[in-house]
Amino acid sequence: MSSLVSAEFLKLRTTRTAYGFLAAIVLLTLGVVAANSANVDLSTKEDLEEALSGAGIAAALLLVLGIVATTGEHRHGTITSSLLASPDRRRLVGAKVIAYLLTGALLGIAAVLATFAVAVPWLSARDAPLDLLDLGDYLGLFVEGVAVSALSGAVGVGIGAIVRNQVAAVVGTLIYLFVLEPVIGVISSDVAAYTIGGSQSALTAAPVEDALDPLVGGLVLAAWALGLSLAGAELEERRDVV
Amino acid sequence: MRKRFGGVTAVDGVSFDVEPGRVTGFLGPNGAGKTTTLRMILGLAHPTSGTATIDGRPYRALPDAARTVGAVLERSGFHPGRRARDHLRAVARAARIPESRADETLEIVALQNARSRRAGQYSLGMRQRLALATALLGDPRILILDEPANGLDPQGIRWLRDFMRWYASQGRTVLVSSHVLSEMAQTADAVIVIARGRVVAQGPVTELIAGRGGAVEVRSPGAERLAAALRSRGFGVERSDDHTLVVTGADVAAVGDLALSEGVAVHGLRERSASLEDVFFELTGEESAPS
Image (cartoon, rainbow over all chains, first blue to last red; front, side):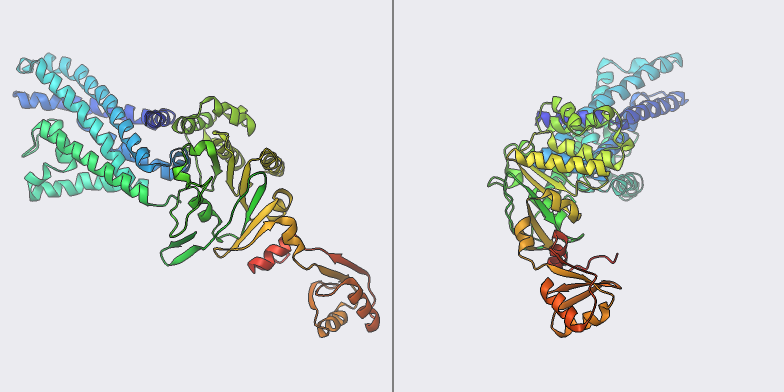
């Protein structure tokens, strides 16, 4: 298994895709941080946590990266040599899940640190009440940011294993996240809290109605990652590769 | 093995053995089920019924699949942004093959000077050679190649032919699909011919050809009259051009005697032995393309 995970990392490192995503994550995160920090009204602890939680963009992009990497094997036909090298398809999906959990964690660390590096000096220069936060709060933001990024990468692999067509998987997921989930939220905010986007929000201190506790949100997102990956592995096992 | 896609039967009870130490050609017109059969052998597609085994086991149950079997398949692709050498390293790593094999196989297929180029910049022929390098990573005893000559220039085709012969001469197994018959006639020791999802013939090339009647080719300015006379004697006659007939069922003596009795001049008369191509068209019921 470790050789398969290591091969996934090698695949990831040897195209420009991952570097593009890293650049996009850092740049977009800084953009959002700048917008949040410039926000006039930062008086409560929740406002500050929202301003300092930089992983929302990272989580969304890692979901897409997981999908792009997994469906890319079918798109470019590399799935054939991957499966000839390791015929056990469940193991191959498992290796990808682990690889993108770890990749997500790494990129999540980059996003959170970039956020802190920009937002903390900026907010303190604007005399925001940063003393409302203690070290534990920063640590919490860090852990949540890394967790949401890591789990989102794994969710992406699961979706990519289920829907092999790259365009359909990416577009379908974006429509689900940005059209369908808000509709669910309008119908029932209780249900919406348990969706993929809803559980991500619980970990990014997003101002969402009826948001779950971060720990519960993390467990729900982990359940999504596990469920989708298992379903994807099972489907890959049964389907023909042509 | 049998394979149905929806209501279509792509492979309809195909069964054959492939022996080591020789090149086995897997022949059939496009759409005959060659690629589907090879994909089922390699565990990429699931047969509707039947099994394929390699050394007694299905591909996916082989303890070290990539070191036992190497395969080049149509549609086996590369990420366009990944360098050739990195592609090989990643496959080697997944199969637990030493990554030094990447450089070795690049050298075998003469791509060592292009190893740092991204696969997207490769020509079709180079991609085909990179696919072969991928298949060779595990130094396998068995090579399965699906139309490997596609995209190769004449030089590359000759190189591939020599390579396959050399590989088989070491006691290894080579199974190669093709629709280019002239190529196979020079390369394969044995062939399996499939058409419409069924095996229509298999065996050594020489036996297949020997088992088929040849034909007599006759050139005559009175070809029309001679053709009529031949037909009335029950021989098969085909007109290949204005003055040339191809006669089946008769030998040269019979054709010559008949021409004499008809008072028709003969400008040329020769026996034509069957080629792999003739056998193929006869077996598959496909007409040769008009020339």
